[in-house]
Image 1: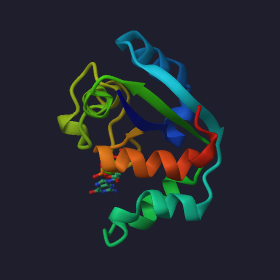
Image 2: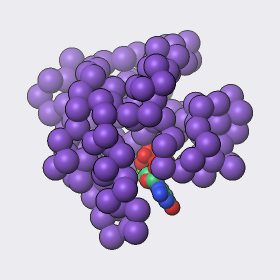
Image 3: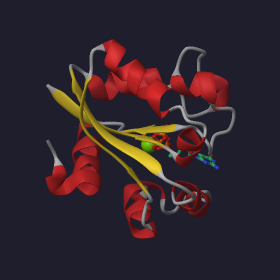
Image 4: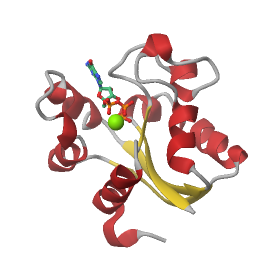
Length: 136
Ligand code: GTP
Ligand code: MG
């Protein structure tokens, strides 16, 4: 059984869609294993997005993720890493299908409501980074 790291970004928390997002994953049959509402220290944001540190949008990305509280979660279920990415929708707003989280709530590439780990190695790294020894 697989685990992934999901995070409602500051725009999603402000727009009060945390409940809807939890509901979507629960209805699909996945199980929440850990969760917290938190402000993100800049150092944690930089580590989380370190694969993008050479990109032109890196500073904007870190500014955004530290701009307000996020809702960080660990979820568990069969093939959840891939399935969560499908439920989230594409990164580019014009490719995010209606019915997906981003396709229902987001119109910009930067304020896109949710993060989900993109591979088993990312999931392992991100779960450790955000929850280290607090895991249930
Ligand atoms: P995350 O779940 O947040 O990691 O998104 P993702 O995996 O769908 O996309 P990726 O890891 O490639 O990029 C991380 C985040 O950087 C995205 O969620 C976007 O918010 C942002 N991003 C990606 N590409 C661009 C870009 O070209 N311009 C800007 N401004 N932001 C971008
Ligand atoms: Mg990513």
